Amino acid sequence: MILGNVVLGVAYSPADVVDILRQAGIEDSVIDLDNRKLIEWLGGGPEVWDPPAGA
Image (cartoon, rainbow, N blue to C red):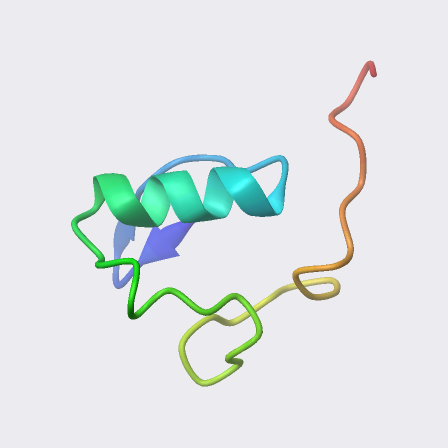
């Protein structure tokens, strides 16, 4: 996950995305994984996840 030019972490699930955003200081009331104006998804959206390599 990248916020601006800062790499915040790697997410393997929607829960990981929420955890990383919380750790970055984003309040729960602002976190909306379906809001495409707030989150730019590459290769899908919050419902599309590939298993980690080797899984």
